[in-house]
Length: 161
Image 1 (cartoon, rainbow, N blue to C red):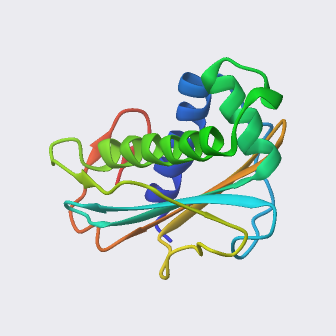
Image 2 (image 1 turned 45 degrees about the horizontal axis):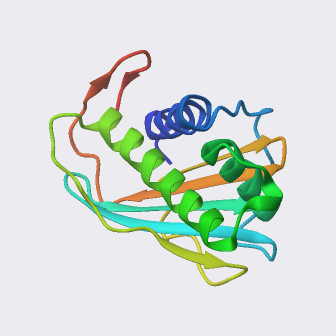
């Protein structure tokens, strides 16, 4: 696992949660090996340099909390479809943030995120970096797999990738 990619992933998760969802993490969380019952997952592939995929796993309670904060509504007013759409958007935003930090001059194509629940969507094989945080409603875990990171690139605030 690349330390620099790990740092980029950590920063991207924290930034997106704080700036777009108005949520501050409570710190690092224990990481489970794969999607567990009671979790919602979104998976998306991306093409560019590098190509790869990202999987976001969120405990159901955290998914509802995140969705309510993002949509400005009460948790009990949310439909399962709304929660799924917000989880997919969170995955999309984190993936975009990571990719823009590791290679800002390349155009990437991101596939539409696919939603899975309780064992339907596993993390990609050959994970390059994983980060898990605790938020008020539960945990958020993001795993990214990249085909290659052959070129060193710098990004603001943390060195090179």
